[in-house]
Length: 97
Image (cartoon, rainbow, N blue to C red):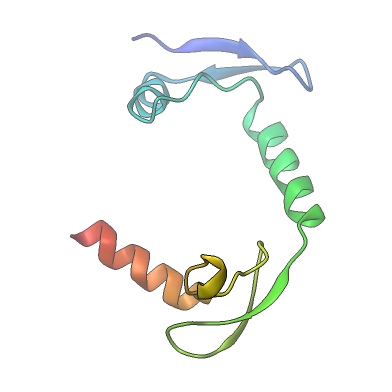
């Protein structure tokens, strides 16, 4: 695959969609980006600022934490909530396996 020039749908600037990025996107079954890196980062930042956080207790270490979803009890069909440190540790363990 050759590098592609794409025009950002937000700012109109041209950006390069590299061969390596194309391979990565294809491996994840993602479509090509429509926004440049700066505009994607700006949109992500907007979404993160609008996100409502909910108080929770980590099901592994018992620490108070906040999560971007409303936790449900096990009786309601929910799963244990993990704080960021425990979540990152769990994810690291799964990736290593």
